[in-house]
Image (cartoon, rainbow, N blue to C red; front, top):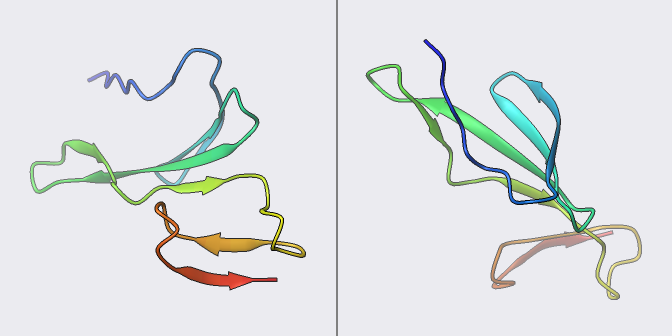
Length: 77
């Protein structure tokens, strides 16, 4: 069976795949890690919790971890 996963926007590039995780380099230079999970029927689904590695904010010295909406900050380093 061949499974088609449509997650790329124009200009995006898949740069790696390992352990059900796909690394997508966005056209903006950001990196998104997309995780595939399998349901009870062994059908792959895209996990709603992806990781986006982006450019640091001006408030972070080295790195900052926040949620999508900026509602909470896990930490700045």
